[in-house]
Length: 483
Image 1: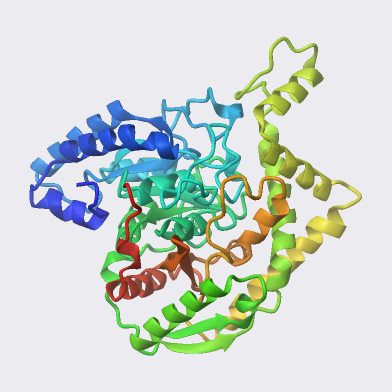
Image 2 (image 1 turned 30 degrees about the vertical axis):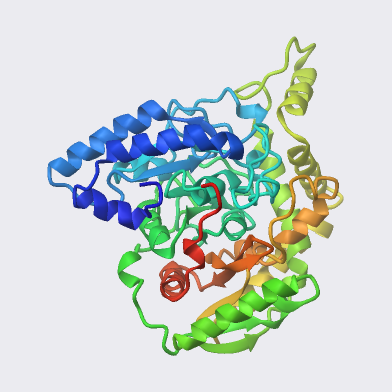
């Protein structure tokens, strides 16, 4: 049962081949047995899961149906879940039990999903390797000595290891797409505003976006259907109709114009990944797509702009964690200043402290214009590049990451080296565009992803292209040895 996709689970439940309760018990036992090697979960919610599974079975017995009714999933541990620890991978929130559900959680619960637990993540979603979590690093099931990518590495490792069929994740600079590439999954970052951020603990508010991680584009379509939609509680949520993503999967790719930016194939890209991307292009050409070289001239400025804007927003968002209202509180503070300093110093890890300091510096009176304002101007130039490109092409294709997953600890002494791994993904966040990563092959036994970008609210187009590609390739069906 653990090898079933979300779509196969929906069919199996509809045909009464098994119940949601039976499936949930199988997967909970599998997590208990295998997750100690991976460390992909922070919290298991066994009682809640069995309660939700029984309720889903009753709903089906009463004639209800739905692709997500009775489907087991997990939530990245920054989605607030009522009465359950929501830690954000940090000591700061180790004792925090959310008093309400995030909109994503409540929407998926209403659709009948079964929550197996909360997945491990980089602390406050800050990292590219899932090594900054206070609960320890997550391991990549394809090679336990390598990282699974971050910050949604727990969700990615759990799905890749067949501990569950799909999971929620978030993407601020590539944190859905990069782990998807590193673990042989399909991951989708929707258009900014497509999925509600209410109840999703913020890292960088103008960049964060929730989305699905699963094995196939079809499963991502099913999970996104349950997540997407306007939310009056979220001021950045956009009131745009949500199409039937599953219904659009089978459209023809004949005449689809695919742009390939020449800037993607520079010196920083592993030539073996470049070869796999070219193979993917040829496969899509066979399906009728037309390839055109394009240019994104301001891409080279994206990383420095992103690493000014994101830490600046983080320094503001994380100021609320002070040891007074909630979160970690130091022992026996001498005064209020000591309380603030020690609570934050003890509660936040090194990477979070680094980004808070960078952000506070960029926003300070003497440097705001020189750094933050200039970064926002570059952000607009990046967006303009995409708008120009989408006048000529329907989607943009390239590598998701410049390299395959690196070894655990390999980049710990050089944070900038890890930041550079986001070179292909952060532009979509700066511009607010939807992006998808899908499996495209292997380098040294480690998975590689190909990234697709589309105009605003064209998630359906991305899912259609990925689904058609997956009907004609089998990379996404490969399973890591031992799982």
